Length: 282
Length: 122
Image (cartoon, rainbow over all chains, first blue to last red; front, side, top):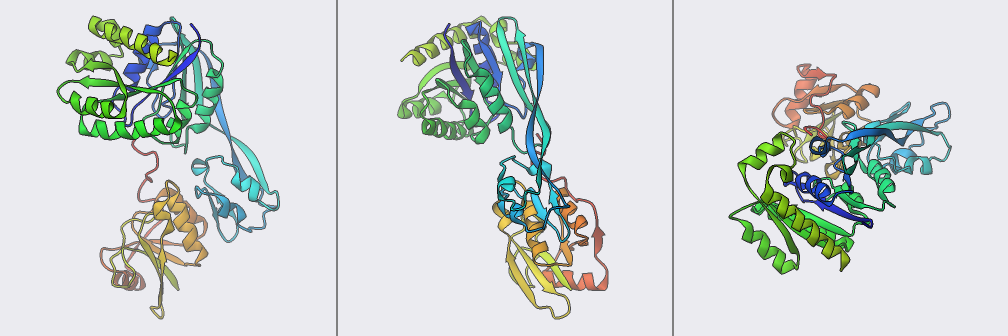
């Protein structure tokens, strides 16, 4: 099968992004599952991959050479993240506030800032039977996972297989980086007013990036029409509805794949993958 | 002595703001004359790093003492390094806090009173 990238996202956490991503990756077979939810990757719990490679992701942060520093304060002014503070006798650097933007290096008139490498997280690669597995994990307390996502994007750029990206929740920078270059975005939502609100934010984001999109209603049930009406108005195809069942929550809590515990869900995902591929072909 | 107090308003009668990094205003009071200056806290809108940004503003103003309530770990590190003592505010207005400070009845804090908010609870 030729390579393409499907990103699974949702405005809010807990809607079922990971459920949709892991089951879809499994149904597609010979695919690559990529967990970009670097603050809380949990796809591995369902796919149980054999990890073959683990790599540390480092960023460059500033260290002030106090022998040469004149305390002019240009670096402090340049920092948009307040990671540098100027005192009477020295500049303090707050590593975990640093976004590695490099502005302080650029602005220092005396070349007194030294590049220091700092690990912020890890990328793991492995195999979960027929599915290739990649995930990123940001160390606790770090400012941003974006450098990890950039590394991951390099790894999957030229893969000749279907790539399923499990995006971070929300609609901030990490999401934008994770959906970059996607052929299709699948937006997972739940049929509640809160679900719709965050779904709308995600829809606006994907629209802005000009990526084709489709929706999946998770925990489907009585309130479905609020999502369906919205999708109709916005011209978004609802690819699937995953019903709400207590057994699913149980299976999830035990780290089981829904397609392996329920035939109806397997059919839903088979159809979901076929329909998604149709959308990509167009 | 120049004393900064985090404040909800722009006068000495305003209540102390229980936050530091995201306090609405800082009032810098000259403890001898009771003259004061109001600083709009630009760090309020900052994503992260509000504490260090607010601390930098106050240090640039040349304050000698800070009276506030919830000072996070980054800001506390800045004040400790700058050797600016931090005192815990009592409930009430700015004036009361200055008077309590002068009487020596405010509690000195040297460690962060909260863990900061960025990336907590994840």
